[in-house]
Image (tube, rainbow, N blue to C red; front, side):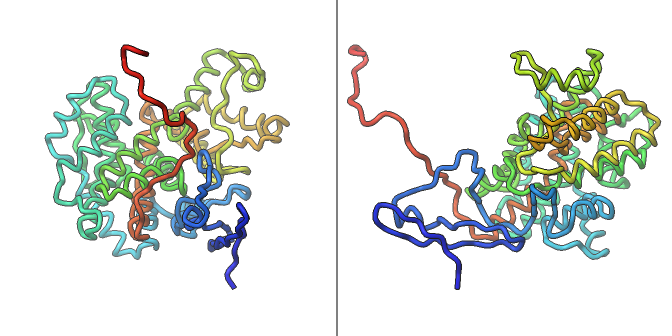
Length: 428
């Protein structure tokens, strides 16, 4: 017998179905609530509201668990590649060798941009933020590739998907090169996905650019860890915008804009700026923490700790911390920022203030240290996050379409003025 919940209101009792997920999560299906009672639910921030059922990513915030399509993030980080994870997220299974080779080859052959994009970027101000440039450029892809915009045509969708994954690194590096006045670098189809990104980001036409395999592996790892995270702000934005049946390029452009916010993807930039400020002021980690804990108006703001979902450790932070040490050690870099980060983490794990509030280091805490160590400017951190999150957005968008979605249309509780008589201008 199916489980139900009872709601009693205004003398009537209605039964609402209980939906149970494969990992034991339970939800009350309120799809018929308004039609039966005239009521809606009010849940600011959607903290208790499930917008969909999904088979893509599972998170258990209490236990610190993250899985893509059932695979633990720790195993994928150790054994897989970013493009392999991208395929897994979008199509549901790890690809066989020949399928993966064909997928990677297709991505490699779509990396080049239409030559008119040079003019597109040159029209932007030099100090344009890369996320603004990327959001605009991804939206503009719909004008350059009108042959693949139908969201329900499987072949057109496949072409758009491959184009997006291939071209976003190129678009991001063009935005960066424009901001520093260097020439754009064409992609090199002989290189790996991450190798190509590093070549376009840091290379110049003047000399050959050597790709450090340690750095390449670390960036690939970071992309894997960022690839999807369930119904976060940007993924939900992509789903909501996509529910209007607009093309994939426009939907992803909206996701990039959502990710840009400092409360979402911009947090890793905040972390590196915090660590830099501690270093420049000559503070110890303990001094900074005490300042952050004070109730004074000018108290320091501690970023990189705690997470909306994880109430235990963030499993991605554990993986990134290990990679961070490996990258800096193998590159022979002595990082004061890393020393401060480690000190802050040690304090947080023991300090009663942090323990009571379950404020553990999150994924942003060490990722910025890696980005900074390889020479990435802070305003590019979020753009690199977007490259990683892209397959998750696409997977969420595809699943939303497969579910025969309705157009997203949240309700509200109106608290404004009641009907009023219009007052003529001269009488106001």
